[in-house]
Amino acid sequence: MSISKFSSTYTRLAAASAALLAPIAAFAQDAATTAAPAAAAAAPAMTVDKGDNTWMLVSTVLVLLMTIPGLALFYGGLVRAKNMLSVLMQVFMITAVVMIIWVTYGYSLAFTDGGSLNSFVGGFSKAFLAGVDTTTVSETFTKGVAIPELTFVCFQMTFACITPALIVGAFAERIKFSAVMLFVILWVTFVYFPMAHMVWFWGGPSSYTSPSGLIFSYGALDFAGGTVVHINAGIAGLIGAIMLGKRTGYKKDIMAPHSMTLTMVGASLLWVGWFGFNAGSNLEANAYASLAMINTFVATAAAAVSWCLVENFARGKASMLGAASGAVAGLVAVTPAAGFAGPMGSIVLGLIVSPVCYFFVDVVKNKFNYDDSLDVFGVHCIGGILGAIGTGILVTPALGGAGIVDYSTADFAAGYPGTATQVLAQLKAVLTTIVWSGVGSAILYKIVDVVIGLRVSVEAEREGLDLATHGEAAYHS
Image (cartoon, rainbow, N blue to C red; front, side, top):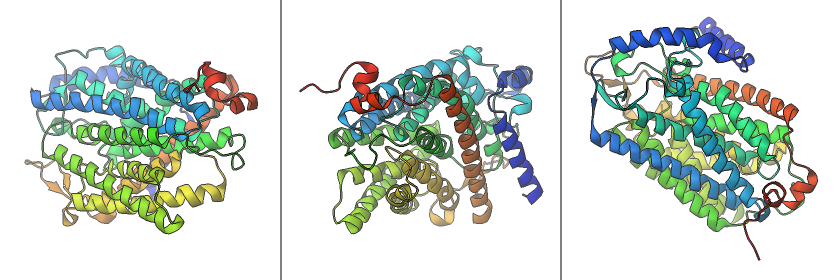
């Protein structure tokens, strides 16, 4: 891509980010409604396999398991006992609220044609799931093969739920519950749904030349959400941690995790649920799902080992917190690469990601003195960036990768455009995500702060958010 085209793309992106809070529907709805009948008329006959649908139903439940109870317990164990229930409540209620938003208009904004704004967001042609019923289908990555559209709606809904829930770890123990909920409603609407559209919206194998989302049009690869979920949430978390300020007593009071037992249970549930997250993103129960599964096993294992080795060299002891952090870092890094890299490449990715994330958690955070409570930026954003870029390298068949399917060929042959070309596409995807999420999140935090305020009082923070906000305690002596 020429420099002029590259600049043009980012000029468009900056303009879209600045107008993030404008009503998207006013621009996109008419064009999307007009385009939908034409696309439906041209769609070929689809076949639905019960095995594929069964796998996707199971994967959907596994991703929910990642969020509640997995992420809730992982985060809950890492905070102080007086804030345990506040974290559980935030994750639980984010999940519930986003589910309602998703079926109301989120699915439509993410996965329909947005007309003149299609590069950035969809339209409202499927708002309130209009036209989605037991007879409609969504095509997989094989031409003419589909799953019920309701299954696809449910699967993607769980992604929409866990992504904003990841953010709360960055400002845990000091934010108002009402602020969390208002921010999440705004954030999924103006940041997450457009990001999901930009990365994952395309015509499918039967209509691969149809207009796609901006990041998809780069040729960037993101199998299960390295950009959409992890970099997106990680940047939003960093912005939130900075804008809220440090916890009262930060670096003065003891703020150690109150229950590594619960954190280990939560991390384990995350690992189990992540098989639905990664292998489920294949949309079919075939060999590519198996590839994503084994990569999710070995990259995570390698990252857990790697983090413990780094800790042992740096501090003389390997910790349970380190093992859990390493496992999550490995899961994050392999997410965009799961269906593209080979198992040996995934092990290398896992071995590399932990030292990098450890450096950001232990050195960079202290150097710049920001209070990312549970290291959302250091693990999710940094791990996501490394995984996204690494995907562009490890996908090559020369390194055991699966190659990139070329849907313009008769047999959908897999190839590789070259390291420089693919890594550049990955870098553009990363930069686009950082700009969109960073600018959008900063605007939305400011709006919430002006409307209801972001932070609890010092007294409430010292008492603990469990009692101050929810009137109950996690534990009774």
